[in-house]
Image 1: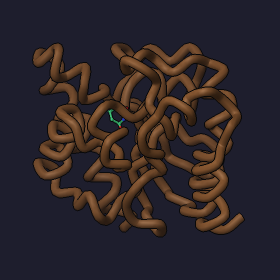
Image 2: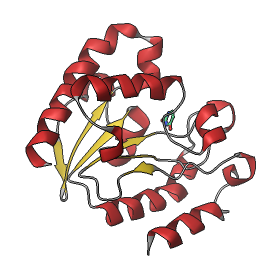
Image 3: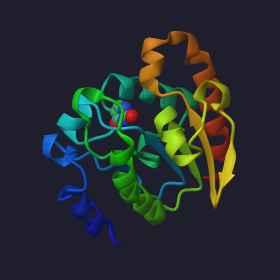
Image 4: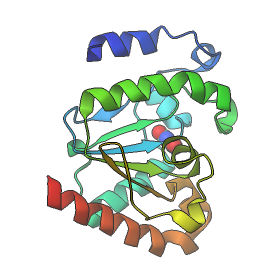
Length: 183
Ligand code: URA
């Protein structure tokens, strides 16, 4: 599948009802040849309006971490498990994830990143392990197939709980250190 084919199948997707309630598809953004990919959970309100992942309050905080550790947002690729916003920003349902994950898989197949960083619990449970415990396991690295993977706290958690920001910075410093080795 090409990028154009993938995007148009996402645009016309009827695999779950979220395509009917969303404003814009949030397909993913960044460098299609990125070595590093970040995967969040699902679009929120600002993302739904703009069609771009991580542009709301959580996204602005995430940008600060990228800047702090010297990762250029345009160099990496950013996507979510879900491409459409769940109403009231509720957690993505397992059945929504089950049908939407194929699109993310196809994005990963096209990009062929070396490193994948999950943003938050939902993404880590889906991409690393169903019993992933973010508070215990964030910042640990695993090799899954050809990908080096880790998870860090979701930036929206850090908006609610600033006490975890130092751990997030340490995890992101390690992401940048590894990224600088391979880029
Ligand atoms: N939270 C996410 O997980 N993804 C976004 O794109 C925005 C907020």
